[in-house]
Length: 187
Image (cartoon, rainbow, N blue to C red; front, side):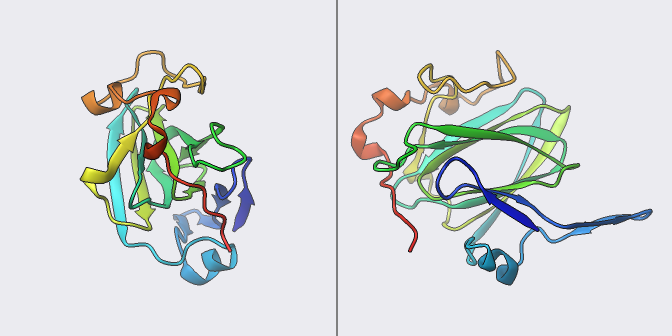
């Protein structure tokens, strides 16, 4: 597998090794020893599966008191995946990266605790899967506006399908400082 750090500290793009032949393919989506050698978490407590149709945008989400690290990938379809660094004290605070994740390219992204995450579906539909380092806590769920003008994310959709919650999140500039995670450097 190939692992490379992105422009955001602690955010990694992973390309698992795919074994393909006339029958189809096989790949490991996570393996504690190999991913641990790449300095990625070895303990996940929850797996999630999301199905969405074209134009659906989910995000930008994060948890504050119980921050989740996420290993994300797409098993079918294609999404435009975004990670925003909102960690107070990070040298890349307010920066974001994006990548295309698909059932064909098999790429994964590791999103460290304290970053906001979201995606937009580009294909007719998409199956999005992710492992979390912390349990989902609805009372601890926070978000950031997908169309924050200061972030100027180049979303590939002008009028996405959004949940009511996602439609009303604040911009980064209007979020109370205490609602932002603190950057923690890995040892």
